[in-house]
Image 1 (cartoon, rainbow, N blue to C red):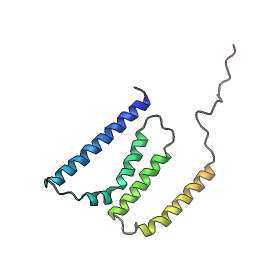
Image 2: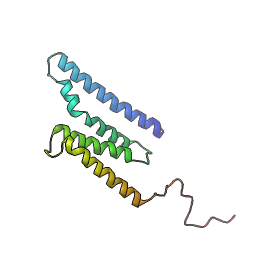
Image 3: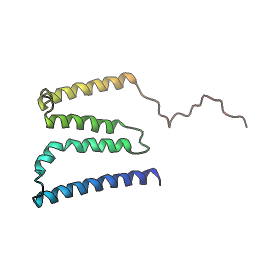
Image 4: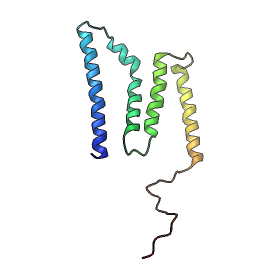
Length: 132
């Protein structure tokens, strides 16, 4: 099985589990087995979808760039903390200035770090070429 079909089957597995879980919740709600306020669940836990997508990207085989996955996980976690109101100081009014500061720091780090050599484009070898 190649890497693409492996990640596709992994995505199908996760999507299938999520679909079953949501279906079970709707079924239980509609039949008064367990009352679930679907609107509340969606409003409160939508950032978990961002976190899940980031984790799935990290688990994807053969991905060289993890920045998008880290972005989803970090911002999904921050959004989740805000919606759950776990920290009094972490509110929307404080989030945007902090996000701007974090983005600026990230840009400075990237600027001073400079371009990173790519493994694929590095054709230089420490050993001399073999003689024919």
